[in-house]
Figure 1 (spheres, rainbow, N blue to C red):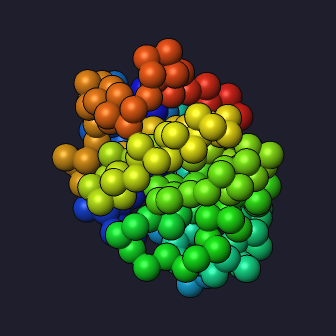
Figure 2: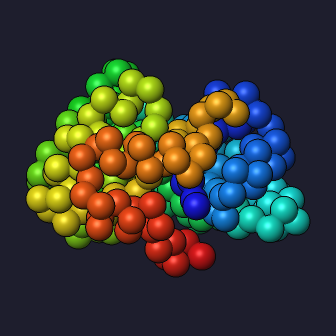
Length: 212
């Protein structure tokens, strides 16, 4: 089990990193990425702070990825900020996609999908075929999310991925303890997106070797 999109008190989550790690471990997660919201104002603070938690996660028998979620970033600045995050030690860079429930600037999906330093486009809303094909070319994964509101377009994202061959990844976008999914909930979110059983198994057990 894995989750590549969680938040802590470093942004708008309610758990400090240690408690998030512990709760995820109890649920059976082997890999957890902490990707708090960043912009230019806080990126230099959050990345080194999260990196310090890797030893705690290891002590619990978990692999933790230190990441960021570039949030409401100008599309023209996504590549520069994503590259900077990697240079500062981030294991994973997520971009806050064009969800239907927040005023994300149009062009964000396209910029993220064409960026070689971005790993996951979170809750991409009504992503287009062209954007998804660009994601395939640049190895940007598209998120199926359990987050309320953001998950309204999971079915659309799943169909676009099926048409284009884009890689899907399942995340909670956790902000609170109740957001972390157990094994059954993970299955429900994937199958509820209209994913066929053979593809669902691949998503639920996604090969994360590119991060590990």
